[in-house]
Amino acid sequence: MIGTEFLKGSGLGNQLFCYISARCIALEHGYEFGTASQQEFANNIHSNQGMYFMDVDLGKEITPEMQKYLKRYDEKEDRVFIGNATHDMTHGCYISGSDEHLLNSIEDDTIIYGNLQSEDYFGKYKNEIKSWLKVKPEFESYEYTRDNLCIINMRGGEYASEPELYLDRRYWLNAIKAMKKIRPDMEFMIVTEDVAAAHKVLPEYEAHHFDMGKDYVTIKNARYLILSNSSFAVIPALTSDTVQYVIAPKYWARHNVSNGYWSSEQNIYSFLNYMDKHGRIFTADECKKELEEYKKKSALFKRLNKKPEGISKSLQMLRIKLIYADYMIKKIVRKIERETGVIHEYKGL
Image 1 (cartoon, rainbow, N blue to C red):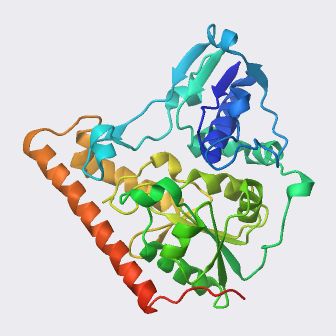
Image 2: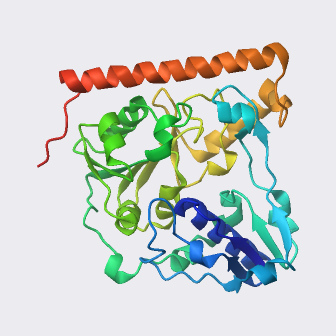
Image 3: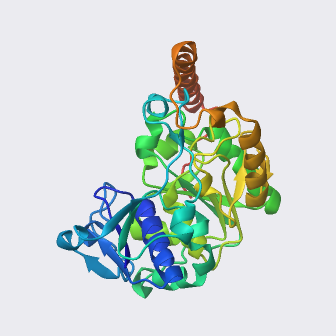
């Protein structure tokens, strides 16, 4: 048996990735599939209703007693220590790709832990995943499925206090501009767990937080999507039968600060298109090729998993302060623009 555990407090996107990757790995090797801590599935800070809008087969229940006899495997991690934030200097910035051992050599009777978000783990089983994650008919919704409507999934919450992570207004405006090139009559609506934060970044556009299920199906059934660097929207984009074009931030969780590395490489997906800080669009294949070239030349990758010391450390700590100062200045400017009417607020229909 191959299994995974739903860790307490984990977001739905993270849990779904662990679920589909572990199940696909089990399927690929002909092993039975199971899950531990099933009561934690789809219960987190955003919802405590469980997976009410899907009937998901979680496989065999792995009890605490069973876990004592199963082997544990932790997905391989690579990190770079860089002055993006205190987190990235203390714990490292997660940059890992897929783990070859998981793909080729994992043994039976193992419970696996990790990020588990690489398409290498699940890509060949997309049709199966659609059937595993089928929304119940009573929760399915096509209310916001229109040929000229783009759904923006904006992540707020704890992201809003992280300058290296929280996407700037410029990213959203560039993505909106790109969507309007596809359809000049394109309209936009935000789906988010944090309407207040969305209003500060893009006050011109309608923003909603319905509930976890309707947020999910609204994203899944969109024709066009602009995503944040959050795992929540990736699975509905993967399983969508309606989506035609998706834009996501290049370099994913370090879109704001990267000079070529990804956080993480696992988040380069064949079904997404990636926008850089200048508004240029790249395919997944282009991103992968560019990253491989970066790895060959980058001094950062030569210091993989090693913390900087001495002068190098001091310079990286200074970089953190500069990034934070730039972020605070932008917040002040946006507030002034909203209050003076430079940015017009959405007033409803």
